[in-house]
Amino acid sequence: MGPENKYAWTATVGEKGQIVIPKQAREVFGIKPGDTLIILGDKERGMAIPPKGAFNEVIDTVLKDIGGDGK
Image (cartoon, rainbow, N blue to C red; front, side, top):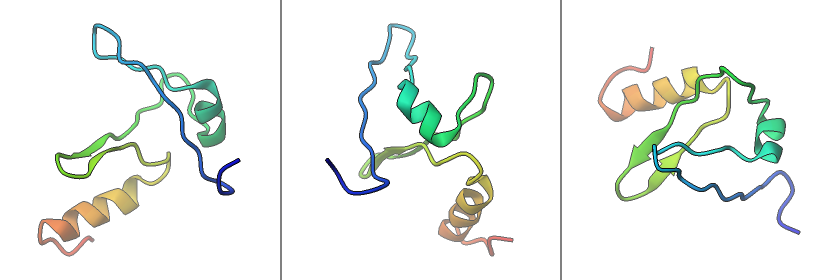
């Protein structure tokens, strides 16, 4: 058993580039059909899908990284 509140899943990429988010992951993060997800990528660090509701925090971080004031 891993650390509390830490998870790892696998997903297979289909021919059209689609992935299926595992059921347990959808339940843990409250992801429902029709939800929009943000997918972030960095060639050196990989990809991330931040949790639902983290949009403002993600945008603030991105703006700070590109020299904005984050507001």
